Amino acid sequence: MNIGIYVEGGHYLGLGNVYRMISLAKSLMQEPYIQVCFITTSDDAIPELIRSHGFVNVITQIDLTAVHACLARLNLATLIVDVLNVDVNFISEVKAKYFFKLVLFGNNNEANDLSDLVINAIISTKQFRNENYIDKNNTHYLKGPKYLTLRDEFEFQGYRHANAIKNVLLLFGGSDQANLSFKILRDLLADDRVKHLNFTIVTGAAYINEGSLEQFGTRENVNILKNITNVNEVMLACDFLFTSAGTAFFEGLYLGIPSVAFFQNNAQKEVFGDFFNTYEYENVPSIVELMMEVYGDYARFCRGVSDLEVGRGKKEIVETILNLRK
Image 1 (cartoon, one colour):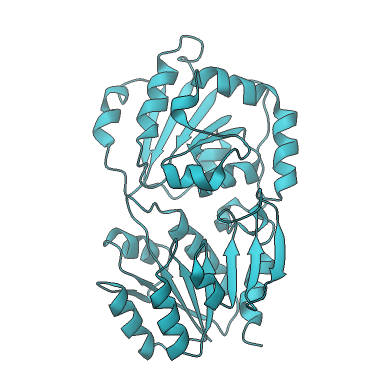
Image 2: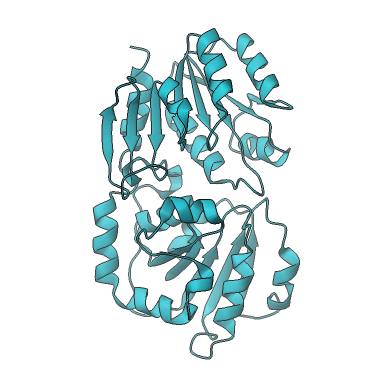
């Protein structure tokens, strides 16, 4: 069975959905009869990232029209699309022309009505409630943090609370559009209460503000890492996580690491609203006091995480996708 995955990522789009599709593809290919092909119009860094995870069948196209045209030669059983608010005309055209099943991730427009399965872990959920239902258009929905597709390395691991913060991680995605890595590290190092702690900053392939961090690079307690592959290990070595309102935040919640997330843009703010431990940077009077408050009441943090069931539905996602052809 041939499955196509159309995904886009980059500086403004971020890399969370690309990693999500890489993880999903690995799970799908555990079935011996599944072959996966990636399709993207993104810059060279995205196909290179996908190939670095062992996928050789990666097709790059110049635009959405070219993506549409290339589908004719792929003989797909299922097409998975992970593009926020994908073009409705594109979905309508491929649905009319081809007989493959259509799966959308993280989408919230009229294209959902034309699809066989929509998986929204974050977008369009009702207060991030977990739901599994079929609507009036016969579209099957899996919604809520339970259906977050975590990278494989995060599964079956957990954080141990040490009752004292020593190591702090700043992880703001592959692009960090608002340059929160710089802003929050600057705030932390300016506060005498915590400037002695160890700080690790992880930047991604699409991060373009390395220059702003150079002034901190000579400090013994600041470690700047770029485009790493062992994110789970780095997370588990830290006592607190500052991150974006997106995939990395839910990965931190899954591991049980005391975490707070900040909005990179208005779109994230609209999606998350007043969701658990999410904030707008400009509205936080003290980054240090926020960290101490969250870390100091770890029991409350754990109760909130438990209610979300983050990432526990991956097997259900894979089975639902494969069952579309039955």
